[in-house]
Length: 264
Image (cartoon, rainbow, N blue to C red; front, side):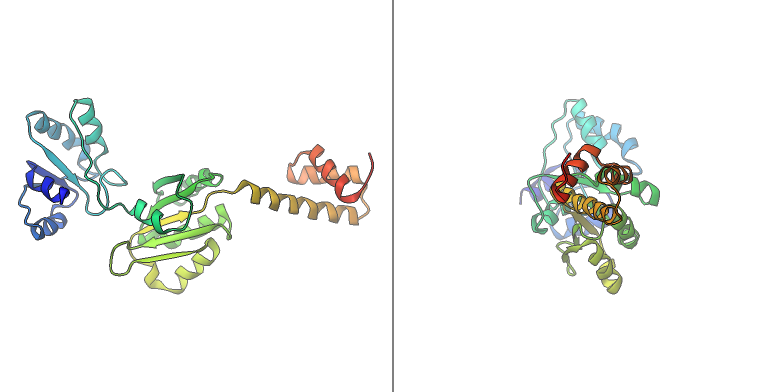
């Protein structure tokens, strides 16, 4: 009700696509003038909007879906408004990021939102690589025509066992929330073409150092067992394992002493 009141009372409304937004405003009997504000004209429109605000007009910014500035236009205008001493007030509404997180079953106390990843494979892989050791829930948006292209990059970066949640078409008729591992998610998407449609919120469980350390310890022990079975002396086996894995030689030696009961 607050949003409806504000949209009726402002001088004008900035919308990503006036044709799209007009349907909703007409449904709510809101006759406020509309003008276009999107990623291609925001920088050019900012100064004119600030001048209107300084002249005493009140303006609203709305998104086609979701919240302005959250992977949507509006940032440059909000920054310019603050620089000009103009008050900016939020009118909370739908936000796919928060809606998805609230039902993902992943930790919500800390999370990282990465917006839309790059459409270019190399740049996308670099972005994911920077997130691989983040201990917090990782969230980003993805477009339907890129969801299958994303999956091999997730597999290569995070491995098949990292927990993953996809929230698709939130609040719409075909809303789907699917929770599994990255490896199984890829198969799920491939097997059902309908699940490749719509707007996606992709969420990954954060990096767990303890589990990673445990897996590394198992790998180290496996290598050491092979070397010892080949009758390679303990110190030499430790040196070889350290060279292969880049793991601390001293820590490896202590681990080997405990496992193989050798004395220094």
